[in-house]
Length: 359
Image (cartoon, rainbow, N blue to C red):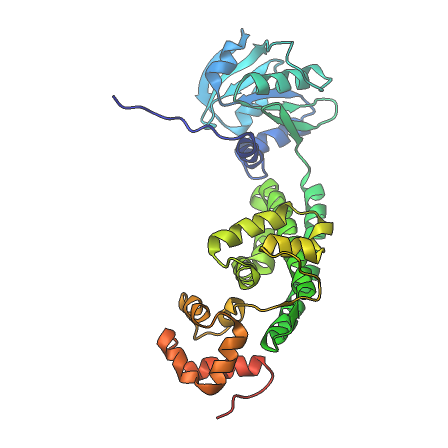
């Protein structure tokens, strides 16, 4: 006997889907904009249609293809409109909903109270459009968010992009300085604490900007390109490698755990060297404690070091400074670890250090 398991989505996942569903460029958003422009109200239930239909009565059975224009026209009637989860069919219009009145809600208007209760009673995404205020609220599991005009979202986008640009510029300068300190073997806990704090500012701004991009729908493509340029894969890689460079446990799995801890820390804690040291797996360190990196981040900046080669090098040497000391004596030994051009790697590290390798 075959068993079918239906994966239950979390409220957060369903809310994100609802945001995408009502973003500019989507057919449902087009209909909502038409409803607002027409100064009419609406109550729309999307998905979980069996439960929705069981919670009401009357109305007109339709079972017609969904279009923005049809939804707009049907909204001129007083009752709710029921649409299937795939936005393929409009199943019923002018439908009278009767959710359990004992379900708690903080909403005041009748349409909004009904929408909030229906979202608790069913797994539908319920949308309420206020005729008087021209405001659209989307409800999922009793939670709601108000659809913002594009101009308001873009105002937030501009602030976030400015934050990313400023922080990225400062971070790039700090990382260049860090490389020089690493090659001189004079990195302190205070140095890396300030950089980890900057990385987390970038991460938080990135998350907020990604949320704005989702809300912008088809109008967020340019912003997405800016985000990739400022905080894309290269920054992610550099952040992970820096954590592995300084963590007591340099595994990728532990790096993910440390990033999660950093993400949960307050802004004040992220600037506290002792708290950062604890997240990295150290005790009893102060801000002047000298930290010795493995060298993964620095090695990743050299083109001849392919994927996997840096790990083999740091496994052998244990620290960037031990690697630098050995390069001066026997650079060709790096060929044993998969470096095709050991001399290029040696010269590159020497230039980062501010000089030329001795012949």
